[in-house]
Length: 100
Image (cartoon, rainbow, N blue to C red; front, side):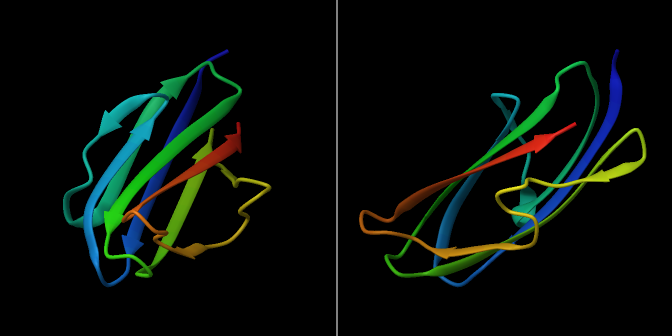
């Protein structure tokens, strides 16, 4: 049965040069490193992939909120803000798997 899924996130950090965000394997708009997504989905999991490029060692923080049919949802592996650093090569990929 389809669920109304709303997902919002903001990525912050110095040294970030490029951000690509994919939700359910589709590239979504992220102007100013902000994502607003609202869809009716039948999937049991929302998969959000962040591809972050920038200077090696640059820190980043991903703040996100997700609701499914009005109930708050989070990734059990990342239940709060996701923080880290861009690794060598100037690129890191972060994937959220949010049960709906």
